[in-house]
Amino acid sequence: MDYERIAADALPTDTVALARALVGVTLVRISSQGVTAGRIVETEAYPLGDPASHAFNGRSRRNGAMFLGPFYSYVYFIYGTYFCFNVSSEPVGIGAAVLVRALEPIAGLELMERRRGTAVVRDLCRGPGRLAQALDIDRALDGRELLTDSELWLAHGRNAGKVGTSRRIGITKAAHRRLRFFERGNSFVSGPKLLNQ
DNA sequence: TAGGCGATGCTCT
DNA sequence: GAGCATCGCCTAG
Image 1: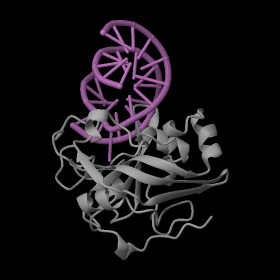
Image 2: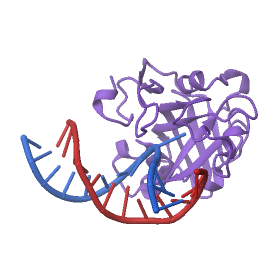
Image 3: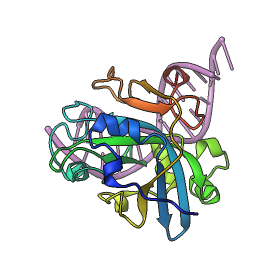
Image 4: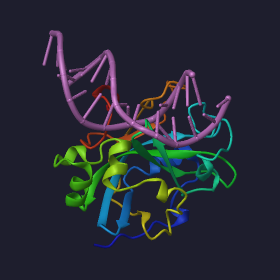
């Protein structure tokens, strides 16, 4: 199967605009185990000046990839168990990113099932921790250029249907801001029903 | 179906 | 030493 890479000028660098634009885009992961891919159906924006952003207190060892310029991977470890995958945004030196929260599985479903330990397709990539596990994304993939990398990249996908917005999930600071974007009616979107309308 | 809660270890103060 | 952009399991209804 062919996955056509997205050109830099086809995506916005503004964090909130990018979060919306990434809904519908395909994320491709090639590892020694094989190919897995999914269509992004849910994102969250963490823009400049946002108290909930990992970059709010400046650059650190962990969040360095958020400052590399647009379209780099920022992967971090959370709750002692899971990894979360982000796409950086904004010009070089500005710390901001978009969290990818859910994918609709497209390719490599058997491999995803093995990595996740479940055959429930709906549960393979529904949630940031789950999709990272399904695509075998960990710290080794932090700081990759997502338009040119050979193991992890963004490709053209089927355009999103209606995109809904809501507050973000699992945070306490700036919790009211509507910076979460998802494809309405898509069953692979995570989160409580109340937020998915 | 919804809500509560424990596990787990890294990161920064 | 505290907090954390989560998940899966449990219970109640």
